[in-house]
Amino acid sequence: MGLSETQIKKFIRLINKTVISLKFYPNRFSDITSLYGFSKLTRRILIGKKYAIFYRVNKNQQIVQIGSLVQQKQVKVNF
Image 1 (tube, rainbow, N blue to C red):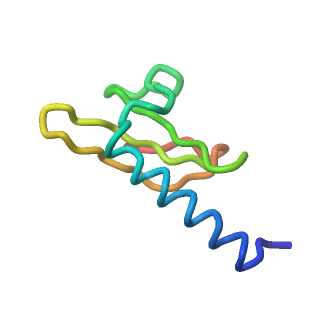
Image 2: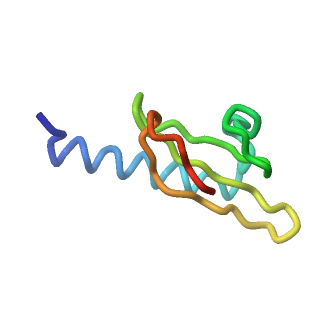
């Protein structure tokens, strides 16, 4: 049993809105650097209960580097 098209569109809108908000509040999500053993400061956006997006903020260049959407249980992520 998968998600309906309406549910998928709702998730996509939520993800887009959240990613756009990083322009104004880049540090709003949890620092998970030590939790997952990353060498660079990394933050996590939780999407529902199963998914996450990892991202990093480069303050010098004023950019946000966004990683892939991943399942929480597959967190063997190279980022």
